[in-house]
Length: 293
Length: 195
Image (tube, rainbow over all chains, first blue to last red; front, side, top):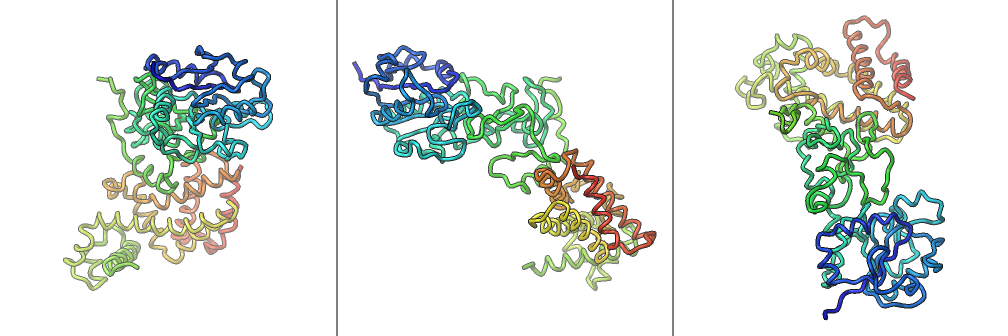
């Protein structure tokens, strides 16, 4: 019988969204042939949570889901103690989701010093600095199941992943969500006559889409292998970023007509110059419904 | 460092502006411009293939010139109110020092849209100038000084006001010198646009 990689999935302050997302991994059956959970809040594990907190059980990879705080207890054991113990046993640590990576939406809760494992929004923390070298972050609300599964397989196969400044694999986070969006023509010609759920229109200009300045690959590695938010007609809400969630997610914040957040790396004058040119033209094809004969 | 050819183009633009202002756009011909510059008509066509092309290049030249001046103001670490005054001041200064430039903008570019429809659609040919005005507005809103509103509502108020004053000056209607209105007009514009 082949040796499976042992995973410990610790859930802190979380909605379990990442676990639910991971249940949609299309090759889950194969995954469970290659990996086993010593404990997981939803999957059957080889050990109970009581055993995890009372003993030192071997695991290869420690997975952390949810925002963390020194106030949180897991089965009466302080969460920080639990993380310290198992991060010394595991050879790799993966933070799962934006909460575990940056603090996420639970930063609004009443817990003290709530954050991600290594980052409080964009700020680097020193709490777990000694284990940072073996941490990989998979941000997202929720995580894309393939980002997580592929990262775990890369660890298993000893493939060296290049990481960005927030320890996220560049394979998935060097891109923006805009990359591969089927609405790019509408973006190029500044047409946002979108109605939610419709095929036409770019949602960047009026409907709050954050795809041009959000890192991820939702339009490259599709969700459930078929779709993405922007393809389905909903704006990207920037869920992989350190400052997620912003407010008014369905409305583009503008100052005197200029979007507050511009496409990543595009200087304001460059954006305005291009916008001025494209605004001068009307592309009739893009003004019509795609299926309108 | 600009090349000899670019310098010559600039000379043609400057001379054309002056002739357009004195003789009128339609009454000025390419041979007139060549003659004023002591160039052959054939040589003129090496720089600008037609009067329409020259007309579009001139408006881009003016937009670039004004845009550069406004960018210098936008990049200063001063309040929005001070920026407003500086923009009004520079606009009037240009109107006094280079009246042909503002005259071209108001009387030729805005009044002869047929000449500019092909190649100068929308605000393409005045992009550099408009971009700086947009940035002035946007930064004013971010600082909490200016009210967030439709860009053209604010743009019309600002530029329409300035253009109107320069027009009145050109018609010799204003009882005072143009620069004597700077403080009052700046105050009015800022008050109208601020929160």
